[in-house]
Length: 356
Image (cartoon, rainbow, N blue to C red; front, side):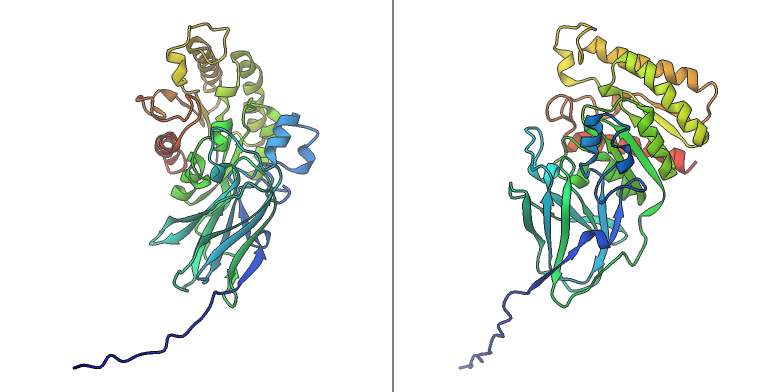
């Protein structure tokens, strides 16, 4: 009869966590001279419309890059508003998600779930091998951040990125609407701007302003401080036809005055799902005729400008998110499927522009 040897099990207890201020690492997705985790510089507060300034305090598209050999990662953060949006998950509006660079690509790790309070603390992951990894932490899309800390094992190391991976020299800049800002992906890393950033490993600055993307020259002034490689103007869904005709030429002229070679991409509005059923009336915003008027105005500006400007491009929205009417959460804002389809569609267009 064999004897089973009893071995003493060493009790290790829980590993203590040490928190570090996330702003000490690399922040990407911001314009130059902005306050921590804001999207427009403080000097713009009295130059842009009040709703735009308020939305610029949302941390949409902003990420933290760091490296660590920790076995666990916790996040501690304080929100500015703690707002609940009916057409968005709490994770996308006021939570965070984390990616690690594995096998030459960014792989999703986990999320920091908000607790429906201003002050939040969440475990993203535990029990990892203690090897050094490169991380990308995506911030909330529809709330602002007052403070943000990354928690790692006591005795583990955490540093700025040891590898560049994401090129920050000439970012891709999006200026658009609530869809651009991220409504209504399920978490921050699944918006089409975030997907493009990880695909190209090129910094993306997200200037989506929910309900307030109006092709305004004032925003272009700040865009150009980033020395962008591509500018995508996706404001059509928020802009009546007369606003497009009035504002867009001024914005293009300003961009030209700073850099007349930087590519500009104009994106049409999608046809909202409910427009197929609403009584058609061009005076009612969101009806089929109204949306067609918006897109026609965009095309009118494009046709005029392409005569004198080489690097201006036009994206027809017909196939942007497919034709099966399954890509929005509410008839307007993209669900995860919609964001993924928009990413794939725009990826091919942008690739031809930045890698001709």
